[in-house]
Length: 436
Ligand code: SAJ
Image (tube, rainbow, N blue to C red):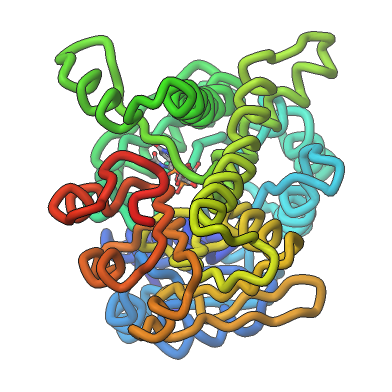
């Protein structure tokens, strides 16, 4: 690592994923040397070779900061002692029983505790339940005999990365931060102000933790609302997307969300459960979160029923039919299939005897229970040979006219082909079964 100017701290980033790597390169761009820590040798080797494994970070950015000696990656967590600021950006998934799994935070916290030295500022960025910073991380550090707010500083600042978002990046997305003490908050605020345009201070780490969970619960609940509206509209034979577009003309008091095949990603389907779990320990039921989860989980079944209905109109059963799924990523223009509802739909159709293939330009293969499925090329034969084509992820690169014209039966779970359907004889814009 190059010797950074004494007035510029070295930032340690634990977890070089879709949050950590953008954070590291954003800091490096502002002249803050970044030392990335990851448990995966492959990630460390990729970064140190000047390449990026994260879609939102171009290779040349990693290469540039490597060459300038402003970015390095390591698996040696003892080097945390070199860092003046340490940001923890590790996954916070759910366990098999859908409870919070903070094992990654605990592991990172242990590593930080072992290397902790006076003067360091530690910031937890991973989304977690209110109380984690104070109840889980702080004791690990105080066990070292150091005093928070005096010898070391501890904050929570939620990450707000929206994968594939071309407008809102780490540097221009307002950053909320809360400290264990006022001195902690000041250290955290002044650090982020070096490379984040807007820093929003709140009064505690719990307030910052709950802010993030409100943001993502807001999305999960509103997505569930439009998904329920979609099921209501379907029973009323009304085009739900037309209704949503009309409602979105209201210049105040409404925010547009769109129905889809369900709720995917490693954040929105997961984060609210951290809050509902915490509330159960405080003998309170977070009903909106639980209800939203139920409604969103209905959508894969709703879509499978639409495929069944579309085939039935052709006097075919799912069993034995060839079904081509277009897009398995959890949302457009990303390569992530975590919690993707497309997988539930694909496996359900297979369980019903469907001969299912998928094409996704971002996802080359799926591995499930030892079975590997590979993305097939989107050829005319693949489209015409399918008894039903099912569009689940509306990647921007999809040629929607070709897909519509080449399909005998087309079920569209994203209303992506509505315009094409409206311009074609027999097309049904705004329906789920847009052709056939
Ligand atoms: N979805 C819908 N209808 C909508 C919006 C989303 O069905 O109107 C679906 C998507 O297809 C996807 C899921 O919900 O399967 C989640 O989509 P998302 O874009 O809300 O979730 P993420 O995980 O890609 O990113 C979100 C961030 N997104 C936005 O703010 C737009 C943000 O909430 C967080 O910064 C991020 O999760 C995180 O890390 O928490």
